Length: 77
Image (cartoon, rainbow, N blue to C red; front, side, top):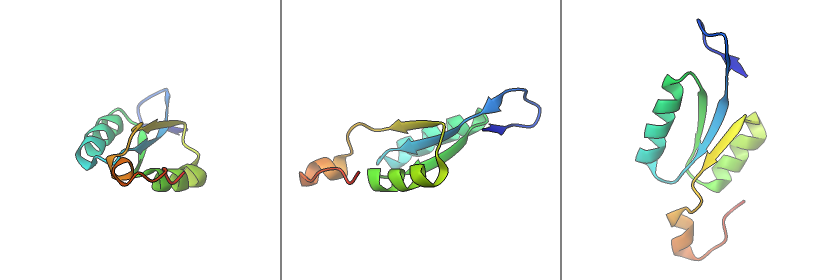
């Protein structure tokens, strides 16, 4: 875990997976202002790759990605 200068508590590395770019940017900015490290992915495949590379403390994900639901194909992970 990471610490922010001037704080006594350890901050989390958070993986944020969402296909909505604006929503993802808003949530990421909010979490970063709170001192967390945020990894962003636009779909499940990117999210899984980031998870395997960085092993985040927390994963926040959209339960349904419109891109995949519209194609009637299974999620990539």
